[in-house]
Length: 357
Ligand SMILES: [Zn+2]
Image (cartoon, rainbow, N blue to C red; front, side, top):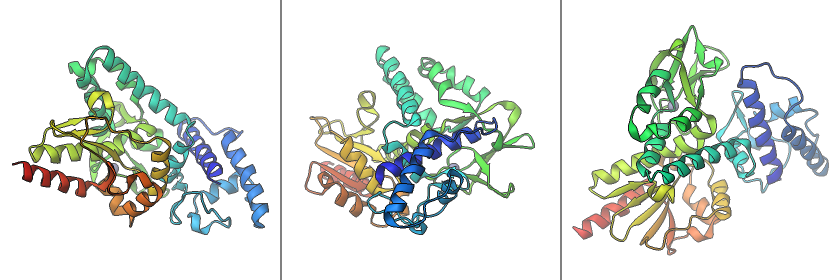
C-alpha cells in the first residue's frame, strides 16, 4: 500500500509539473500514474470495492481526503484529513510521500544542486558561501532579476552564481495577471490564484502567515520563483532554522548554522556542543520512517543531540511528538538523541545558560 501511494504521489507531482510548464498537456499520462492505477485496481478487487475507472477518476480521487476513499488505506502512513491534491496542486502530503520513494525526479534535482553547492564551497574552503546560498533561498523564495544580480555582486554568493540561477525558475504564467506578480508577506514566495481567479493565495503549506500580502512586482521585471522542491525541502524548514538560530543568538549562545558544510542544521554552544536537526515534515509517521531509513547520527563531540520539530508542525498536528516517538523508538527520552518541539529546545538551552552563568 505504501509503495502504491508513493508511486501515485510521484505520478501526481510529475503530472502537475507538466501542467504548469506552460505547454499544453499531452498524453500519455506519467508512467507512475498509470502504474499506481493498476495497483489500486488490484487492491480494489481484493477489498471488493469499485476501482477508479481511469486516470481522470484517479486524479479526482486525489482531491478527496483519505478518510473518504472507498479503499482501506491502512498502513499507508496517511492522516485521514489529508489529500494528495488541493486546488489542483500537489499537497505537502503528496510531496512527502513522493519524496519517501527515494527516486523522485524532484529529490534528485534538489540533492544534485545542493551537492554541487557543497562540493564547490568545500573546494574553495568557503563555508560562508554555503551559508549565504542557503540563507538566500530561505529568505527569498521569490526574487526579481535585478535583485538577484545585486545579490550576486556579494563575494560569498558570487562563487555560487551559476547554482543560485539554477535554483530559480521564471514565475509560472498562472502567477501573472494584468502584468502583475503578487507575493506573500508571510514567506515572500508567490501567491497564485485559486479556481475562482479572484482569490490569491500562498501555496506554501508551512508559510507562517499565508494571508499577508507582500509587495507586487511588475512581470516585466522578470520575477523568479524558487523551484518547487527547494521551496518544500530547503525554504520550509529553513525558516525554522533561521528563527531558532536568531533566538539562540539573542540568548547569547554561540550558534553555527549548517556547520561543517551541513553535517547537521545547527550547533549551539562552543564547549560541549548541542547539535540540532530541524524537521518540518507535516506528518510525524512519515518523518519517523524517514528517520529510520536515514538516521541522524550526531558527531562524537556533541554532548546532546536533538531532532527539533518546527512550531508550525506542532501547532498543526495534535500529539505530533507522541506519534513521532512511538513510530521511531530511538527518539524516546533517556536516549542521547531526543525529539523535542522548538519551544522545548529553546527552554532547555535557556536552563543551561542559567546554570552556567
Ligand atoms: Zn507564504
